[in-house]
Image (cartoon, rainbow, N blue to C red; front, side):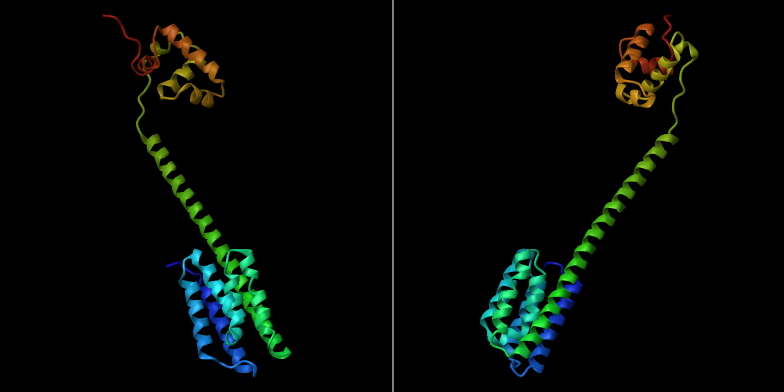
Length: 240
């Protein structure tokens, strides 16, 4: 069952009331029970139908308005049903059958009913616009809420990482012979950062970082980054 905005349902109720009022006030229109029942069924069907079937319900209402004289009083309802469609041509399609239904009436009755149809259509358009705006605002709110949750989780992860004890670097002998820049690069490599991440931290090019890593490996006679990490935290291996 498709969810419907409360404003749309209330607008259909208002349109039904306007149709009944038109029948009671205009001597040219008599309150026929079948027409009222058909109007009530159409309003309920549009509220309950899935989106792909709503245009079919509206088309049925348009046909009744054009072909069934007693249904003419419910032109305001048809205008409201048409206004709830997402297709522009459907929203304006009620004008033709409305004109056909008003043709047999006297000028006063036709003018009064046309005014009621215009009021119902305007109210329905505003109702649909409000509903669409609420949907957009709800989606925006949900997106912001998810972002806040994600940021909270990220902050928690960062706090946990900051609280995690970090192994202290080895004795100065592990860094002997290295320049200050090479020591900075080695410290970040020991944290597990790759060349691109080290370059971002130190505002260097990735090629420069690669050269520093190669220089450290050469100076310390090591073969890979894993040995660099071991050197940083455990110090150089002393032969027995």
